[in-house]
Length: 129
Image (cartoon, rainbow, N blue to C red; front, side, top):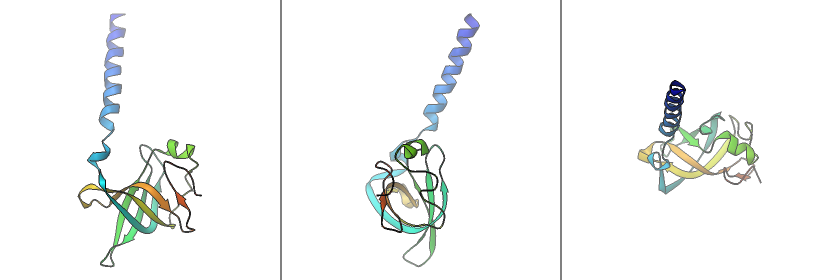
């Protein structure tokens, strides 16, 4: 019985510690004050945990292409709000508004996405309207 308690204690410690270490702070990656909008063509969509991500090509002020990474909530949260893995696909033209990544990292935390047809979707609010 004593060994069982020890094993359960070690397992619990490892399990909860790994969950804590795996998650990160919003403020460690994104700015609370700096918002931006980027427009471009979707290159890839990763509808996987821990955060859904959209990689899209943006033409900068010099006319050069840059790949930006936009992320949002986990897929399970998005599914409950009406999204699915085909809501946004490679080749789509999109405009993303959100919190900019720190240190010019070409990253955004998605607040809204405007699709080609003008409909706006929000990770917190649901599918296209």
